[in-house]
Length: 241
Image 1 (cartoon, rainbow, N blue to C red):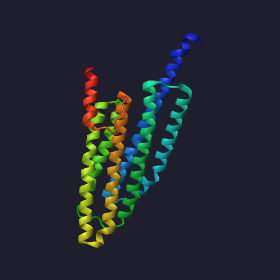
Image 2 (image 1 turned 45 degrees about the vertical axis):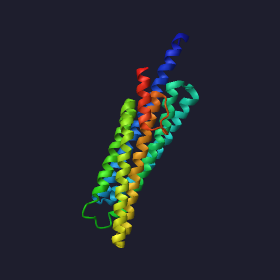
Image 3 (image 1 turned 30 degrees about the vertical axis):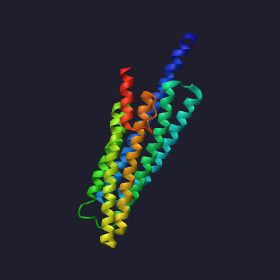
Image 4 (image 1 turned 90 degrees about the vertical axis):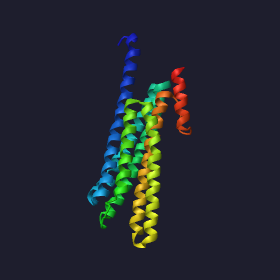
C-alpha cells in the first residue's frame, strides 16, 4: 500500500471499528429489552417457565458486556482515539454497564415471577406492576433509540420521565404496606411485588444513565449531577452561540 493511502485507510478501519462496537451495544440493548419484556410478561401471566427462562438468560447479557468491553479496550490500546471518538468509547463502556444491570434486574423479576406463579394470582392480575413495567420498558427502548441516533434532545426528554417511575414505585410501595398491615397473610406476596417494583424503578434509573451518556457523547458535557433545567438552558445558550 502507498504511504499516502495509509492515513485514510487507518481512519476508515477505525470508523468501521467504532461502528461495529456501536452495533454490538444496540444488539445487547435489544436482548436486554427482550429479557425485560418477558420477565414482566412472566409475572403478569403467571408463567413460571418463562420466568425461569429469563433468569437463565442473564449469562448471555454478561457475555455481551465482557465482549464489548474487551473490544473497547483493544480500540483504546491500538487506535489512541481523540476527542469525540474517545467520548464515544467512554460512553459505550458506561452504557454496557447499565445494560448489564438492567439485565440483572430482569433476572430478579424472572425469579420472583416463577415463584409467584405457584400462588393464586390476585384479582387485579398485578395491574400496577403491568403499568410500571410498561413505563420501564418504554424508557429503556427510548434510551437505546436516543443512543442509536445520538439524539441529545430526546435523551433529555427521557431523563425527565424517570420521575414518573419513581412516583409510581412509591405509590405501589405504600399500597403494599397497607395490604400487609390489613392482612398479614399477604406479606410474602406483597414483599415480592415491592421487590419487582423496586427492580423496575432501578431499570428506569439505568435508562436515565444511558441518556446522560448520550448527552455526554454529543455535547461533551457530564450532566449526572446537574439539574435538567440548568442543562437545557446551558445547551440552548451554546446552540445560540
